[in-house]
Image (tube, one colour):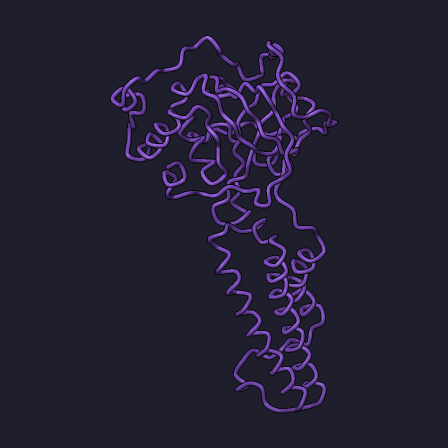
Length: 329
C-alpha cells in the first residue's frame, strides 16, 4: 500500500479517536459540574454516563487502529468502504460532529428561561394544558423584593386574568363530604382527587418541586374546592407584553426525557407591584387561590400577599412523579 494511503487511513482513525474522546469528555465534564441536569432528566442520566464509557472504549480502539495504520500493519479485512480522498467531503462529514462538540464546550451551560417560554407559550392550566399566546417579553428593571401587598390591588385591564373574591369555597366537614368534593369523573383523575383531599386539609399548600405538576393539576381540576386556600410556590418570573403591571406568571419547565421536550407550566400571580420583578428572576410567592380567566381559558390565580426573591435552585426543572402520594404522606 502506498505511504500516502497509509497516512490517510491513519489520519482518519486518529481524527475519529479525537472526536469520540471529545464527546466522552464532554459528558464527563457535564456530570462533574452537575450541568447534565440542564439537558436530560435524572432517570436518563445513567444511560448517558454509560454511553460516555462506551464512547471512550471505542475511541481507544480507533486509536489502536490509527497506530496500526501508521506502522503499516493491516487494520481491516479490506471489506469496508474506502476512506474518501475528497477534502470537502471529509470536512463536511467531520464538521457535523465537531460543530456541536465545539458549541457544547464553548457556550455556557444554563437552564431554559423566558426566551424559550416566549417561543413555546406558557401553560396556565396544568390539567387542561391550555396554552397562552406567546409574545416576546420586553426587559424590565428590577427593584424591591419581599414586599407585602397593600389591602387593595390595582384594577386590572380587560386583558388581565379576572380575579373573583366573592365566590364561596366548597366546605367539607366530614370525610363523606370530602369524598363528594373530590369525586373523580374518570380513572385518570383518581390520583389527582386523592392528592386534592390531602391538600384540602392543609393550612398552607406548599407546592413542592418533586410533585409540582401533580399539585397544580389537582388544584386546577378541583379549583372551586381551593378558593381562598393559602398557597406557596416558587419559580421564575415570566410576562408577556400585553400583561398589566400587576400581573406576571411564576413558571417552571417540566422535563420528561430531555430539554428538547421541556414544557413551561406556571400560575398567574396578582400583586400590586408585580412590574418590579423582572423576567427570569426566581421568586417565592405566598398568597391565596382565586378563580380567574386568561385568553378565554378558566384558570386559577394566586392573589399574592408576599413575594420574596430567591436564588435559582440547583435543579431548576420539574419531572413527572409516578408516586406523588408518597411525597404528601
